[in-house]
Length: 314
View 1 (tube, helix red, strand yellow):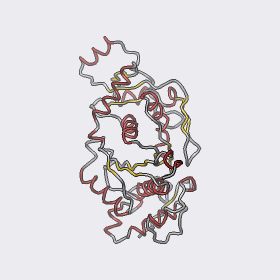
View 2 (view 1 turned 90 degrees about the horizontal axis):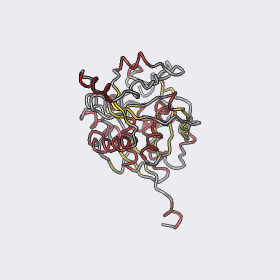
View 3 (view 1 turned 90 degrees about the vertical axis):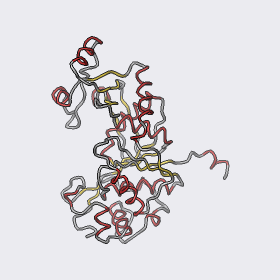
View 4 (view 1 turned 60 degrees about the horizontal axis):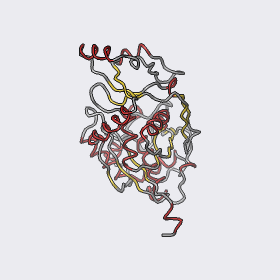
């Protein structure tokens, strides 16, 4: 190893699937691009199961995720603890935020939030801070009435900008674009935004490649990282795969789960070849993922949402 190589931090990427159902071709494309980005730079790939939702995430789906990734040739160097095993770390993070006075209980129901907030610019609803100003007496009365509070964190009243390797990045004035966010739900489950920030820091993740449906989450995650004194990884949000109707790929577009394709006799190289084609990396001919590593650069992947087509892989 040369002196320059010893000073270069290793790239650490991750797969972070939520095992609430079979992996489909849109999931597979994002996973493939994340894997290629890490392998082309000589980095390490981690697998982390994001199973915060105990009801929807099932052991059989976890096993299927592992099988689907391995079937495509997307290997990983280590599997880190699943989110369902990390409650102590999430609780400690909330305690740190509470120690700075940034945590408060929120008694709003989902219906209350829907009535009190309005979508910003046609997007998600913004929490208006309804419970931020409650005094202790008001909180005690609501608890006595049987109301179980969620916990929210006060986000800074400032603009947070996040660079992106694929897109132009995103900036949000958190107070007006997002509002204070939930970090622990009223049922005691920890919220995704907190969990993913703690997870990435704990796992040493340096580079996050994920679908651009999560791009709006990046500023609030960076804000949490700053409040907790955690490092910020480099982000890349890749475009989603669409059906012929222009909507995000889903079951209505046909047999899009990898398990179904496998059962129909479709080979991994056929799937990879088609996913490579819609990413501007091939002509649709069968390929293995290892065929795509040499010379791969994520920045060269089209940042336009790709249409798979109904008859693909039929």
